[in-house]
Image (cartoon, rainbow, N blue to C red):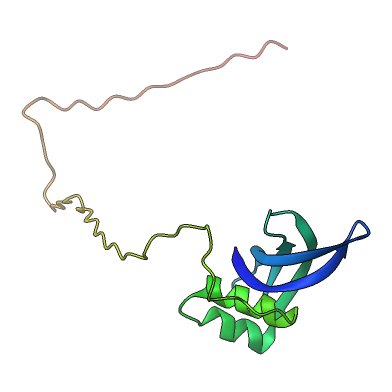
Length: 138
């Protein structure tokens, strides 16, 4: 959720002031198109307006190549709605600093030994033939 410069709107026949923008990525085909659901909220987190916006084409490619696609999504939605994100006020949302974790997993391949000589146990090998006969009553 991001703070925005306050804007006036009507809700249930009353004038309300939206001061927050929330954006959720509802769909992303990871190639050409994404759909964002946005909500404009009051300071008390009451919903003023909601809607959906679709980003595609060149805008999608630019958005997908940014270092912080979450922030870029907010900025794109705000630009489409002619809103200004307020970077001077503090938000109540707490975020952690991004960290990079690298882990390596080593999987050992089982050792397969192929020999060309037959392995014969020290026992007598017998050849056995089994014949099965089935009778059908007519």
